[in-house]
Amino acid sequence: MIHFAAAAAAGHIRFEDLGLHPDVFSIGWFTLRWYSLAYIAGIVIGWWYLLKLLAQPGAPMARRHADDLVFYATLGIILGGRIGYVLFYAPEMLLHPLSILRLWDGGMSFHGGVIGTSLGIIVFARKNGLNWLRIHDYVAACVPFGLFFGRLANFVNGELWGKPADVPWAIVFPRTVPFGLPDPARHPSQLYEAGLEGILLFALMAFAFWRTKARYEPGRLTGTFLLGYGLARFTVEFFREPDQQLRAFAEATGLHMGQWLCVPMIAGGLYLILTAPKRRVRVEPIAGTESAA
Image (cartoon, one colour):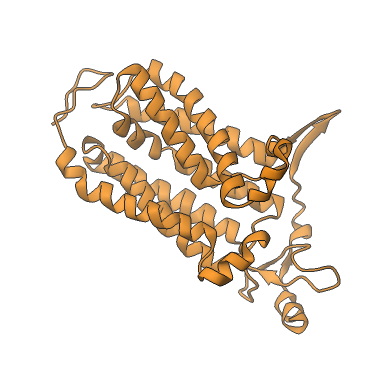
């Protein structure tokens, strides 16, 4: 192990040489972290893009609805993401409830955030008498922004690194093995995820929205997102180290927790895509004047 690690690290970029730091700046007691900024950027840019989508014919809600939806979605992301992390990845935190509130220490689950956001959208849609599945479609097209910035923040933080590798672009992250052992070069799996879950998934969703009639078949865009993200995350997990506290789980089941959580996403995505044509109806837009068959 020691010889392999030393050999794998030879000639590769060392993370500390990149000059990256988790904090953007500090003023007195206040510290702005890249992780927090990633969430803010994802929400703000996602909201801006959502308004662009709603300006097209057949929108499921008006501009005023989008402004309110941001509140519900943000609440769902934070609560769902944190609760999901505790339940899926760190159940021992339940023994210390106050630690759950320490969001600034990190620890968010995307799968939990999806569940939380979905519940928020359902509550919002019921309150306003809107079609919750069509709203999901539009929101799904905006999510890759948050995924992209979030994975970049993971990289800047030097966390969630990949398995040891000797590829030319491997990076030597610090403190990835017990003290006294040399750190091996590893796959920068955070960047793999930023590319697949952020850039590639956005391109797929944008093509489906702007170049096809997918938005007129309720559930198709949501299904495309679930399938695309599920496959991307499932694949990247093969290059990523499992969370330390779940290493035994991964060895016992053959898959990482993240992969198991992607299985229902992939199945649900396929179901929504295959059944979407049955839900196609003439759409009378909430905003705008043009109907869409």
